[in-house]
Amino acid sequence: MPLRRCILLLLDGLADRAQPALDNKTPLQAAKTPNLDYLAQKGLCGFMHAARPGIPLPSEMAHFALFGYENEFPGRGPLEALGAGIELEPGEVAVLARLVSVEVKDGGLYIVEDRFKVTPEEKEAIFSALPQFSTQELTITFKPISGVRGVLVLKGEVSASFSDTDPLKSKAPVFELEPLSFDKTTLKTVQALKQYLIEVWQVLERHPVNKRRRERGLFPLNFLAIHRPGKMQKVEPFAKRWGLRPLTISSGVIYWGIGKYLDFEVEKAEEAGDVAREFSERLRIAQTLSQEFSFIHVHHKGPDEAAHKKDPFLKKKVIEVFDQVIGENLSWLTSPENLLVVTSDHATPSSGPLIHGGEPVPLIFYGKGVWQDGVKEFSEIACASGALGRIKAQDFMYLVLNFLEMAILSGLRYGKVPRPYFSEKTKAFKV
Ligand SMILES: [Zn+2]
Image 1 (cartoon, rainbow, N blue to C red):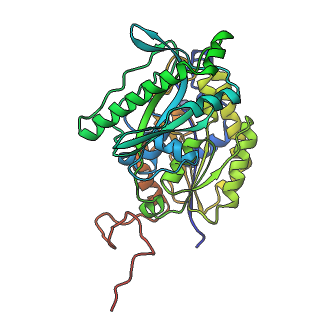
Image 2: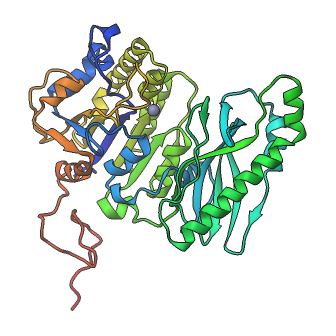
Image 3: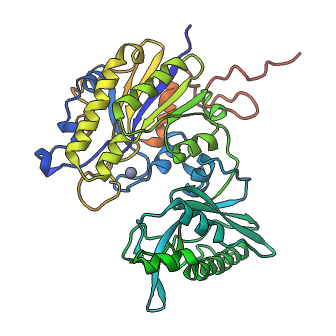
C-alpha cells in the first residue's frame, strides 16, 4: 500500500468578517475560487477555532492547538529565538525585545515612536552598548533577530511569569513590569529584569548615536520594550505523539521555531513578495518530499499580510492567487494516497482596529473515504453548514489519524506509553 499522508495547506489569517467594501461579503466569499470550491464539493467541510470563538489568536498559539500541544505552549519568545537559530536549554527564558523611542511623562516611560529608519552602523553601535547583566541567580543577554528586534535570554534561576511592557504601538505608555506569580524565583527575575531595563535606558539615553540622532531631529533608540516571555521546555516530538513524520514548509522565524520546538523537519521557504511564485515553490517542495513525510504543513502568510494592510480587495486578490496555484497542483494534491486539508489558523479582519479576529476558520478534509457533504463553496459561511460542524483545533489531529486509517480503538493500550495510533514500533511479546 502506498504511504498515506496528510497535506495541510494552511493559509494564514484566511477568515475575515463581512466587509462593507465587498457588499458585506468576506474576502473569501467574494473571491473567485473554483478549485477550492471543487474541494469543498468533493470533501467534508466544517469550521474550527483553536481556543474559544471570539478570542483572537496569534498564529503560534493556534498552531500549537492544531498540532495537539495546546497545553504545552511555551510563549512566543522561545519560539522566535529557536527559529532565528538561537540555542536555548530547557529552563531558560526568552522574551521578545525591540528598540523603541521613549520620553519620560509623569515619571513613567512613554513611547513616542516605534518605527524609524536606522543605519546598520547605528544599530550595531546600540546593540553592542546594551549592558551584560548578571546577579548571583541569573544572567540577561540581548540577542538580535532582525531589524531592531531581538530577544532577551535569561539564564539561571529564572521565571517567565511576568507581564509584557510593550504596548505594541507608539503614542502609548510602556507598561510596568509586573510579576504574575509570587514565588521567590519570579520576584527575583522581575527585580533583576527591571534593574536591567532601567540600565538599558540610562546607557542608551547618553549614547553618542542617540546624541547625534537628536541633533539631526531624529528619534533616539533609547529603550527595549519587551513582550511574550516563555520558558524553553522539552516536549514530546510530534512523530512520537502522532505517529506521523512531519515536515513544515514555511517562511518566518516563528514557523521555523514552532517546527524546531516540535521536532519537525523544517524547510525554510523563500519570501520575496510574489505570492504565486512562493506558493507554487512550496507545493513543488511538498510534492518532491512527499515520499519521505507523512504530515506536510505548507504554510503561507499571504492572506494575513493582506488583511493587516486593511485592504479587503487585496486579500480577495491574494486568495484568488492561492486558488489558482492549488488548481495547477490539483491532480497530485488529490491523488489517492493523500489526505488533503485546507484551512487557516485564525481570522484577520481586513478593516477595523483589531489585529486578529475571534471568528472560527473554514476547513475542508478531502480524501479517500472522507464524507462528501454537498457544501457548494469554500467560505466561512458555506463551511459552517458542512457535515463536520464546528470542531476545536484540539480535535484536528485525531481526525487526521482517523481519515488516514491509523486511529486505534479507544481504550486499547499497547506499549509503555499507549498512543492513539497503531505503531509498528511497539515491541513484540518476548518468549
Ligand atoms: Zn497576523
